[in-house]
Amino acid sequence: MKVDYPGFFRGDKLQSLIADESESEFKSYKEWYEWAKQYVTIVPEKDRRIPVLEALPANIYEDVFTTGKTYWVKKTYSKTPIEYSRDILLSEIQVSILPEVEKRILSNKSFPKITLDDFIIPQKEFTYKPCFEYDSERYYNSFKLGFIKAMKFDSSVKEIPSEFDKLLSNLADEKAKHWLINHMATWLHLFLAGFQYNGRYTRIETIPIFYGEQGTGKNTIIKYFSEAIEEGGYIEVSKEMFGSQFNSWMLNSVILMNEFSENREVRKASSAAIKLLTSPYTVVNEKGMKPYKIDNVAYIAFACNTSDYSAFDVESGDRRLQFISGGKNLNARKHNLCDMQLLEEQKYDFINYLLNYEWDFEFANAVYDDEIKLAEKEANKSPMQYLVDCILEDEDLATITVQKVKARADYEGIKISVRSIGQYLTKRFGQRKSRKIAGKIFWYYTVSETGKIDSLIHAI
Image (cartoon, rainbow, N blue to C red; front, side):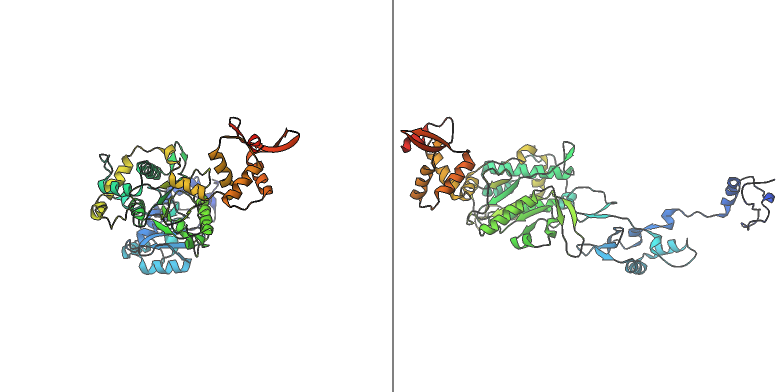
């Protein structure tokens, strides 16, 4: 009988193909395969290939993965993973492999040698994302949770702990304190939700600026907030760090920008920092690594002392900066403002208070003008803007003229040309208009339709 598959015959072991397929004892390949399976041992992949971390001492190896091109090993005593070649990784595994795992692997092999193919080494992408949970199978996340990971959640904490209340009252007046608590609580809830709000990815775009004397507690409040979120707490960024080509400091969930207020050049750097830090994404450039993109979700704050003059170039329409000021403004340690030991003990209650707080996302993303912010805006006005604003504050004008501004400039001792005044007034109020009075042409700019004073008539 003719069959479609080469013939085999039975025996103690599988034998070679017989010459004449017509002598096959099986009608089909499938029939033969079912009979032949009794002579084959199938080793499950979990026995044949071992997850690489299961083969290595857990007290030394935290993670081993590949990016598809190179291998990376993160050990428990190092801050960052180290790049390995294939050969070096294999050599280290051969030396460090647990004896019982090695024995299990070799029992299923025909030759007594460990290779990388004996292990399941996951492929991951580098990332840094502050979050409570993430896909550890796909990403190597250099973010490490702080004490919130192990703390007990207590829904009964509805009042701010006493020592934290004292500290915040030293930093801010009631309005600013309320804004800051809501701001921190909102960020914390977004963090726990993977920065999802109303079904979409989002982040807070406003930035608190702690403004006060040295020692008032600016760093202390950030310290306890950040240590709950990330192991190691916040990073304090100086102007030198910010100006470096390497920006690994961006790999922090809480960033405190400091020393940005010594002169106008540095203040411009602070404005650049704000624009960079409030963009949706940023590219991280670490030494020895290929740059990669991360989400910009860090909690960002600035700090400056009251002795700093015009710390920030605050634009008149700014909607990102909120000054935290107006409190007692005392040196916390010198005046024994709060019990530091009790403050340490209350850190868990403080985080629970923020978790139980009725946070408001819209309020966290809105800012208001206080005395400090108004002063900063005033300090950063151009001389021309200052002159015109002074005139408009003093008089309820319907119109304004170049001559009126020039007279105010001369009175204030500010040297400024008639031409530059005309250019500024045109830019601010639109094209100039003319009126003929007593046979003579006079030029003016309309300030307000409801203004009561006509500068042109008063000038005449």
